[in-house]
Amino acid sequence: MNLRIFDTLEELTRAAERTIRQANPTSVALSGGSTPKPLYESLGKSLPENVTWVLVDERYVPHDDPQSNAAMIERTLFANGIPERWLPFRTELHDPALTARELEREWHDLGLTNLDLVILGCGDDGHTASLFPGTPVLEVEDRIASEVFVPRLDQWRVTLTKPVIRAAKLRIVLATGASKAPILREVREGVQHPIAQATSGFETWWFVDRAAAG
Image (cartoon, rainbow, N blue to C red):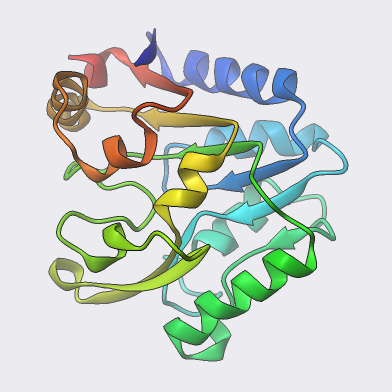
């Protein structure tokens, strides 16, 4: 595990932005949640050009719902204008399986193969993207994207699959807060949480604050 520990979210954000810019990626997958918001706001002030942006996962809600990952990214990273090559999940289709297939179709239309960079979060239960413990999407190995129902949330989601995340050149995991410390410790001990299944054995940089580092 390539672990970098920061005293503040501001320092973590600056380091993550530096890493992204230095990587000079042509394709980046973006996660939602609250932790990457400052990163997206800063990165969006001078948005890297000629990049294909892909949404990592989405709650199956309308675009104007407060839970929408795509809407959050468009308000922050793309505040100065949505780029032409932006691939969100189209929840307006009102069918999670169809939405996943449509993302796959658009992926191929854009000529995407393996991603350069994936920005991930880590849940208190060890999930990343919408790869939740005990859900069948963890077994999907032949798809770019998939729908998944998460029983404990009573919610449908759509997500990039483990093979897509693992195939990227680089993964950056952002984790903050004491609630992440047990998961981080267990991943380091080899527990196969979804975040470990998606990242272990592949170049992954963890950017964490001291609380998450335990």
